[in-house]
Length: 294
Image (cartoon, rainbow, N blue to C red; front, side):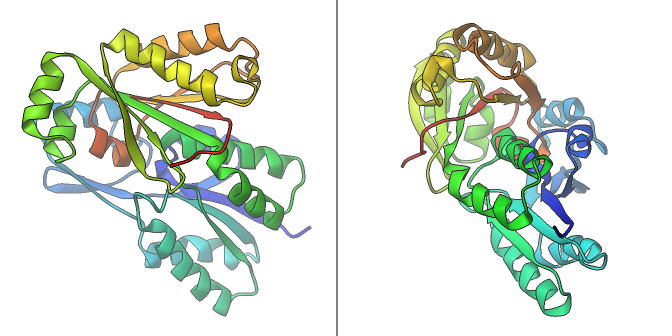
């Protein structure tokens, strides 16, 4: 079987070490903080604690996706070695990176005798990372590049993404919540609960009062949608933006309610690209279950 590379974007919100251990390479998005631009390299250039502190202190953020030229350079490194690539992108529902990767794929395949498989994850953050974890398992089992790409396209909507935020400041700043709604929401301790739909778009689902209650509800969503419900024995990831105690509460509840988990819940930081839009105070829960819908 021809050798191939498993690849993703930095927006999987795992860690550099974790990806290296699983044999996954990544290409970086970009972000700006104040008047300086950086690579989203999973906190290597700038510790994530510092990034979120700067946001709280009023620094403005912007993000930029991987462009076609950057994808070309990324793919060419492996094409020169005669290796195929399975690259999974951040959801096309929130980013144009999928289209940029397709442009680079066509250019590479015109020049080199290799195959570049580009898959739209329809996911984000550590839910996208959880998909990559399963794909790495398939590679370890000896599946081919084509088999893995087809599996990802067939199963990607089974990877559930549920998010809540305990701080509406950055939703207001980004224009996703009005100032009036943000003020009342903060006063009443409203925590919006969102999930990702079948188009890979983030959709508000519920407005829940109180951190403890929204933590309970997000786990109830897992029991409702996870494969085999409370008997779910797959993998589960959590990510958070500078609110580790909130993430650990959700972890505790999941492990109490879903005792058959294959591994303990793994907790990661939300990186600078996704975090630029959520700000601190967001917790996300990811698992495998039924088919996501609108």
